[in-house]
Structure formats: structure tokens, C-alpha cells
Amino acid sequence: MDTLKPRDAKDVEGAVRAAIASEQPLEIIGHGSKRTIGQVMATNAVLELSALNSVKSYEPNELIITVEAGAPLADVKSLIDSKNQRFAFEPMNTAPLLGTLETGTIGGMIAAGLAGPRRIQAGAARDHLLGAQAVSGFGDSFKAGGRVVKNVTGYDLCKLLAGSWGTLAVMTEATLKVMPKPESERTLVLRGLADAAANKAMTAALGSPYDVSGAAHVPKSALRDAAGALGGLGSPGEALTLVRLEGIIASAVDRAASLARLLSRFGAAETIEDEHSTAIWECVRDVEPFAVKGPLGGWSVWRIVCPPAAGSVLGDRLVREAGADVLYDWGGGLIWAAMAPKPDAHAALVRRLAAASGGHATLLRAAEEVRRQVDVFQPASAGVAALSERVRRSFDPKGILNRGRMTRG
Image (cartoon, rainbow, N blue to C red; front, side, top):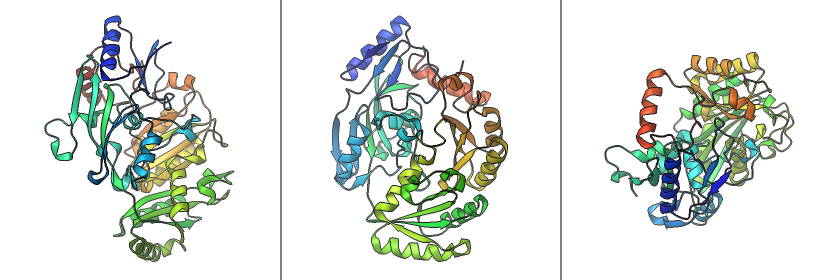
């Protein structure tokens, strides 16, 4: 397989134009850490963006950073951490779940759009993408957005790139909003709740005035062997319900105490502080109970988004009808479901149950032979599919970029 390593946006333009001329589709990667997500693509050429890795500008006082798409995510996070700042949407590290090296790029982070537990408070990756430069499937560079939200008029094209998995354009540069880190963090832990009770507790917390930034529930089955899962907090056979608060110390302490009283009808809440709390939420964010090195490592893993009120019912049906292990995030609005190996990864059942609850499902981890047989991403209705295809063709009429990654057949 030919691997092209452009040094700048001009090289990317040349590579795309050459691919158009030869009618050879390109697989677009940064470090390739998410390469096993999506349909299996047929291509003999890879466009690797790891050399586009510089930080173009960083203005901590303005809460803005501009970086090239191949910049290592870990390095950028370290840079903004040195100024006590962060990406508020809490980008997921897929390495534990997929069994890859802990690498990844800014472009991959945006293209995947996988936000963590703080999604319920801070929004998604697309909400923090202020501007982008990219090369379309015509081989032409374009700019979208700007350096501040108010620069955006007309079509906000850069938002389309977030979550597009490289099928619309090759991103070469991105401008992102960063946010200050909170002074303190507190997590309230309720033990032993059934899924339905946990859903009610999370709903009560999210409906309170205490500015909750994370609400998750880990059923006892998800911690089946878990001496080290969730930062050592859990033990096998014990369900955990987690609620996070952040802010200045005085505020976090006071809100945590008030929220503990509000949730007292569900049981006594213990409080986990600061670094230990952060470690727990990193485990939730990265779905470490289902990590590839754990007991469920050979299982397929679905990412299901649904209305939070329907979460516990949907999760219960997945457990009863498919023998799944589940983990709830976003107050019940995000369900991670691990399924025992099966040629179709229980796709028909998962999608039927998700649709009945008003949700949709993505097969985030599965063997290659499974991804060849089932739709990884949620199949769209006829009208939405037609609209999506029109948008894709307006960016990439010949389907040169990541052809077939999001649709089967």
C-alpha cells in the first residue's frame, strides 16, 4: 500500500488531485489510532497527515489555539495544560477500547467527534471548533469559520467536518476554543443502585441547580473482574453511580454537600476529590471496563445515544435480550453496550431497540469480518441519506476521500 506523507497543505492538494486523476481513493489518517472504526475500505493509497504537526498559534488569554491537523493530541493537551487550560468537551481516548497505542491527532479528534462525560454541560467537539482549513475532494484548499464565534456567517462549514470521519475534506488546520481548568473537582458516589434507580438519581442531579458536569452509572456486571477499573473505586459485583461537580473550592464543596442531601433518598453518597475524581472520570470517558485487555476484550462494543429518560429501559432490554454488559454516561443518554461475539454483532436487535427508544447506534469496536457484514454507522432514512449524499458530493464528487468508511456497499 502506498503511503503519502504531505509536508503542508500544498502537498495535500497535490496528493488529492493526483488521486482524482488516477481515480484512486485515499484513506485519510493522522496516526491511525481510530483506523478500525468504520466500514472496511478498499484502497491502495494512504494519505498520512502526521507531518502537519505544528502549533500555529496559542493565545491563552484569548482561549484560542490554532494547530495543524496532524499535531499529536497528547502534545497539544500537555501544552494547554501548562497554562491550566483544557478542551472542555473531554475528547475520548479510544486506545483502551480498541487496543491501539495511545496516539491520536487533533484532526482525528475532530473527525471522530467523540466527546466525553462533560458533553452534557460543555457540548460536543463541533461546538468548540471555531475554524478550519481543509482540502476538498476537488483538490482545492478552503477556509471555514474564523477565530471567534462571531466571525461565522452563512453556512458554518467547519461544523460539518466534525464527526465526518474524513469523508468530506482533508483537514489541514483547526482553530479550537479552550477553557480554564476548574480549581477543584468533586464526585459523589452512590453504591448498589439498580439501573432504573440510578437513572432517577442522575436525572435528579442534572435537574438540580448545582451545575453537574458528569453523571454516569456502572452496573455491577460491568465490573466483573475489575480490581483496577474506575481508578480502583469499584469492586466486582458492585454497581456505582457517579455525579461530578467542578468549580472553585468553596463552590464545589458547598454544591457537593447540597447535592448529597438532595440524593440522600437514593442512599448515602461518599465524596471523591480532585485527582482521584479525575482518574475515575477518565476511566468512564474511555470505557475502561470494556477495554480490549479486559474480560470483554473480544466482544463487540456499541455506542448508543438515546433520550436520557429511556436509557435504563433500553439498557435493561439489551441485557435481557442480547446478554449485553452496559455502562451509562450522559445521565443515561449514552449507553456503551458490550456484546458477546456474533457474526452480525446483534446489529438488527440493537438498532431495533435503539430506534424504539428514539436513539441511534454506532458499532465502535468489532472484528473486520463483522464490519464487512453490518452497517457500522446508523443507516439514515431515505430523505436524510439523499441530503447527506448531496452534501458529500458538493465536497467530494468522485468519492476520493475515505470512500465507503461511513456507508456499506
